[in-house]
Image (cartoon, rainbow, N blue to C red; front, side, top):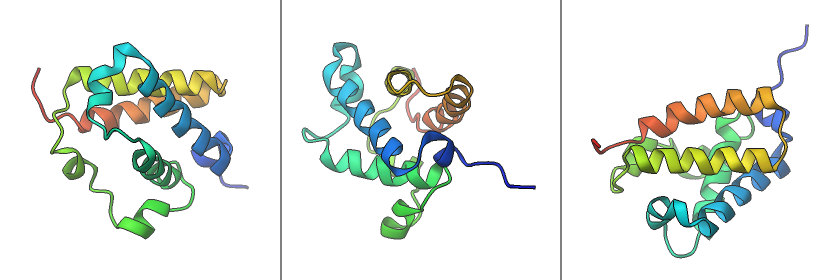
Length: 129
């Protein structure tokens, strides 16, 4: 019996993960309703794009690019300097959902990823609303 494919493989590997990240940041940069989320990032999104690509590669079951370069992600600790509440979480989720929809990903894969993304995004909240 063959092991189940990882989310990384089901998504389409490196090229598709990079496309997802680029679509995510393009949407975040272009949509007026995502201003709170955009303001949490540097003017240039180059570093953010690369770090999210590297993180998602490993998080989705592919190569552990982020941990190989930076060590344990310590997501909550790395996000503590930023005020993240329900609105920022929801904007992040909206952006990721749109990015996946633009890629026309399989609906079951999108749903699985949205559930997993929500758990992580909600864990990043550090402000009571």
